[in-house]
Image 1 (cartoon, rainbow, N blue to C red):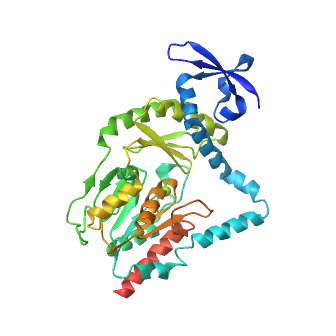
Image 2 (tube, rainbow, N blue to C red):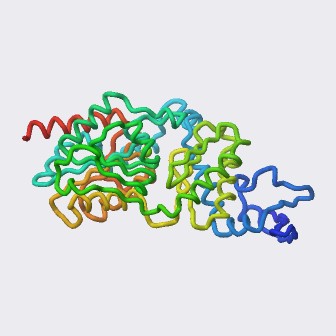
Image 3 (cartoon, protein in one colour):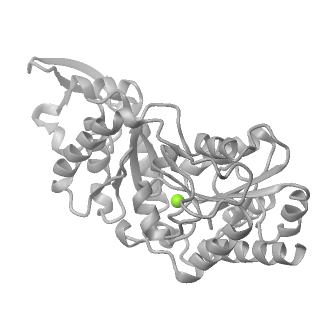
Length: 370
Ligand SMILES: [Mg+2]
């Protein structure tokens, strides 16, 4: 372990020098190379030091590392011939604990006896494939038809990190509920009212006071990230997404660091980590899980045993909803993933095409049982 001098510059530009353990405090991914100074000194702002002390930097760099480990190039080099024995064991143990929702279809439908199924669907990576350009994450017509059919038989909500208007422009189905910006912007169907309590108009925006702040951060990040090729900032109204999908792996640390430094100035905002995306959102306790509870309540199922919510999603942010279902002991979370991941979901589906198969099967089963 080596000791290294760190120069901490405060707001007025006064430099304070402290000695720290290089190995235990910093990882190379936390301190960008341009901060290296001659004489073994690192210049680092006081705010940044506080952030590192608070673990923010370590958390963000751990996220970059996990993203790197699961990047296609790394996966390819790890899988040169076939999966190792350990990986195969891990995969089968995971599949055992989180079996395929297609394989467990009968269990799901028999649990719904006497209950109203309510469907909750994430968008990116669930109904549409993950693509490089987030503006081109289109869903197929076949998937749209499957979702349209599902909504004929069950109240259906799209729950996405995207802004509500954007996700609606992809899905284009007026008969659904939409919870955009991770559930911070909820609106009921603009047509077709046939379920319990559906005549009541649903509209809820728990974080409206944060709109100007999110907009300000979006503008700052859009400007600052111009120096990093491929970086993309998306304004999702109540949250702001920084996309890493088109950024060279070598620049991931620099981009994550930049986001972290900007966020230091906004204590009322926080970031959450998704699939190659950092999402900046208000610190209020509201997430996809809260949105699920809100929608169930709006439909009149707050404390009801007559409902079976089914939530399908592929990302960390969907875990909040899986956890709500697990804690309620009601319904099923279905994680969309090909690889083992820690999850509170009960079942899994490998990819959007399996989600489509599952939705179609559910429609067929419902038609036959009517
Ligand atoms: Mg997703």
